[in-house]
Length: 108
Image: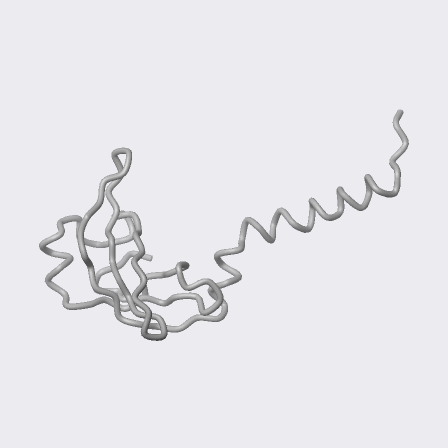
């Protein structure tokens, strides 16, 4: 049986601690968040999946993001665009990480 060296133990400990942190990175960043209003631009199809592309402003900088249509209550662009804007929460650490908080339009 192979004897564990100290460096092997340290690397194993780092891997065990680092893996959960990487898996939940998005959730960790949402601890510090702000809310803003987002506007739907268009629907996008990538490899058979439909995404809603929307824009929002973070410190006078316009960001464009996409989220799968499954996170929205309505599946047609006309219904989604009826609302002028919808409320999202974005991470102040990583602004591309967003969550829909508007219950009228989102399922998240």
